[in-house]
Each structure stands twice: as C-alpha cells, then as structure tokens.
Length: 163
Image 1 (cartoon, rainbow, N blue to C red):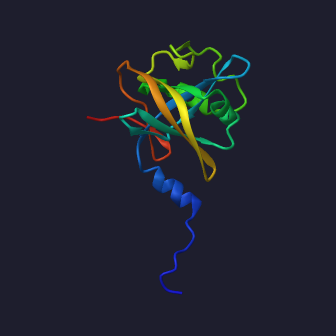
Image 2: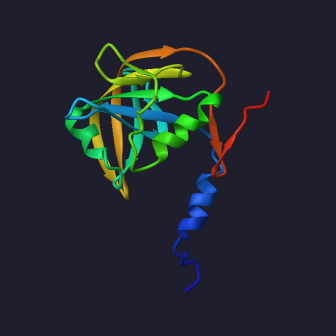
Image 3: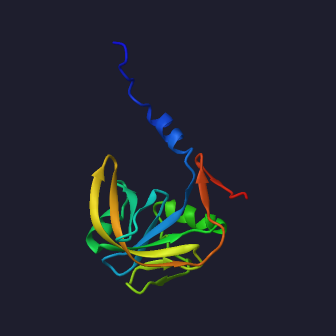
C-alpha cells in the first residue's frame, strides 16, 4: 500500500540520534548500603527554569535504576574534556565504579564527582516509563559551575570542541 511507512531500523535510528552532539554527565546516587553508585548519561535536558527542572534517561537494564526511584535524590556531574576515563569507567558494568575516584557529598548528601565542569543536586519529581528507559524529571536544589572545556559525544565517539 502506498504511503505506508516501513518499520524504523534500530541501527539507523541510533545512527541518526548520534548526529546530535551531547555533553557527558555522571548521575550518582547513594545506595541503601550507604555506598555511592553512578552511571554515565548523555540523555540530559533542562526542562524548566521556574521551577528548575531537568531530566535524565536511565535504561531499564541499569542495575541502579531502582536506587533512583527509592532514594529520590541524585547528583549530576558534567564531565570535562580530560575526564574521558571517568565517562568510560561509569559506563562499564561489573566493577566498583567509584574505586579510586575523587568525589564528595553535596549539601543534600548526594555524590558529586570532584573536578567536574559543573554539578547539580536533584530530587526526582516524576518518573515516566518510556520504551526501554525511565525518564526521570527532577527538581534542581543546587547547581555550581566550575569551568573548563566539556567532554562531548558525537557519532558514537568522543569529540572535541572547536572555536
């Protein structure tokens, strides 16, 4: 039948989305055992200025997704260009991602990575199940800019910012 669309190929969809350059962040939460946990995210968006809202997307296959729901508060650290190793570390599975990583607790008790480009403390206000991810909409309770050059991700690889 004419005009009927073919199903979208997942690889082509991913390749197309990869054409949108993003920054890289690490979202961190304190576990029920009191230990810090985190993961690399590049699905981040500012949602609203009043009130200050952001969103991140966390995959259903993430072993710490439930912590974001049960704890309700998380830290978000935007990475600098020289922190590519941290991006890779927090994207890997099956290891203590915080081993040897410098971090501190924010005023609200959430983990924040040291030497980040900027960071935020967030409180989940709404979670929406969307496909294979949860969209976490969170109110920002504090934010700090530390400066530097951002770590960028484009076309499934790290990229450099050029003037």
